[in-house]
Amino acid sequence: MNFLVLVSGNGSNLQALIDAERAGRFAPLGAGNGAASPEKEGRIAAVLSDRAGVFALERAKTAGIPALTEEPDRRLVQPGERQRDLSRRILCAAREWKADLIILAGFLSILRGEIIREYEGRIINIHPSLLPKYGGPGMYGDRVHRAVLAAGEKESGCTVHLVDEGTDTGSILLQRTIPVLAEDTVETLAERIHQEEHVAIVEAAAAMVAKLRKPE
Image 1 (tube, helix red, strand yellow):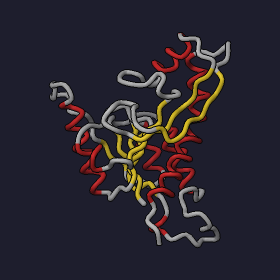
Image 2 (spheres, one colour):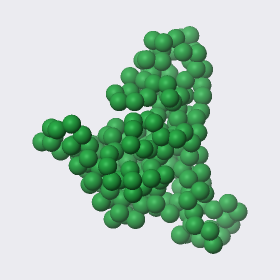
Image 3 (cartoon, one colour):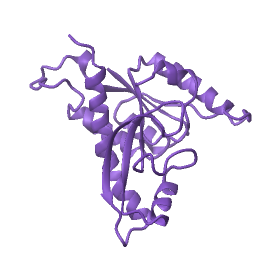
Image 4 (cartoon, rainbow, N blue to C red):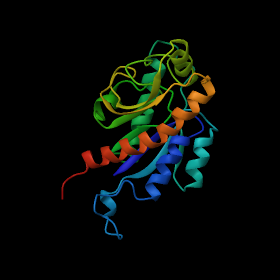
């Protein structure tokens, strides 16, 4: 079962997935002692970034995983045109690598159009808040944590959800929650949520492998 992992930056969530694959977290239940059938295991087939030169691509190369770059075409200026064009190219990559599951692991571009329909129920995204709070267009990274602190929230966390035609509106798969501490800054809150993301994205990917795996 092939994963196409989409990234935009440092790639710490990607590294969590790489480490989990090496540890056999995406193998069938009861497949210990080397009994797993390779076609039933989840594996990262390729990593694709919408930004050239990010460290996530180096993580992929170090792990021996094909590392691809598809940047948004800045010449396209009509609303949504750039997103649809990039989404078409990502769909081509997903088809080429025979991806069964697309994982957005810190991916900042918005997917639109045919890829959403063709991969309905097979695209997951991790977001650094407890959705539906602090989601939607423009809410990513430190912007989310800054808004959480400004609102005086007592807790925050991360959410893994299915991707649909909206932005952060798909069905929630799982959430992990942490308290917001009185002394928290944007940086400290982001770091603690990051640690929860590494757990959540692996748990969600493993759950999707189990859900999508074809029966014997």
